[in-house]
Length: 184
Figure (spheres, rainbow, N blue to C red):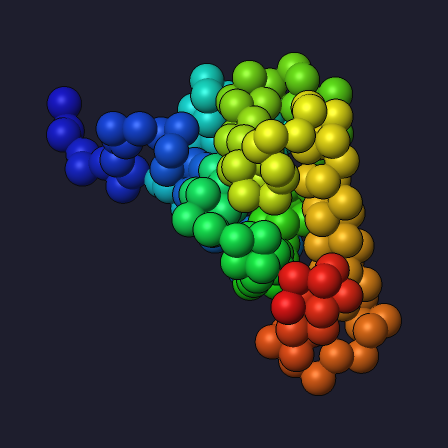
């Protein structure tokens, strides 16, 4: 029997390697380019191996969105003021446009069904409540304070990315967004 050297390798954590590879593909080419086969090629495994970790492409997209929400939450947790939070949010969304798209397009029903995605979005919500709302206010008032800024941030980022605001640069846009949201 001939002992052939494998041209693939075993991962200690295939799930994490697949998510990392998916994020690279999304960053470089957008979500349309993401396939289970391409990820398998990148990590050096048979595509069938990934189905042990992800039921389908949609589950893989949930994992990518979860990673994005955790990254945004980690940045948001460092914010000490609403202005800093808004700057971090806008910089993330503009610096990771395709990842941000994946995060924002995962259906709310998906969030409720995927515990990892729900936990990741809950982290961002907690970070948002901590810095964007008055801790002495009642729950509904705090929710509205956060929603007001989130809606402004997301809407502004979406309009800027679509080219409708004609800002000279991302930096100029963020400055204007902070003024519009009365955070500058």
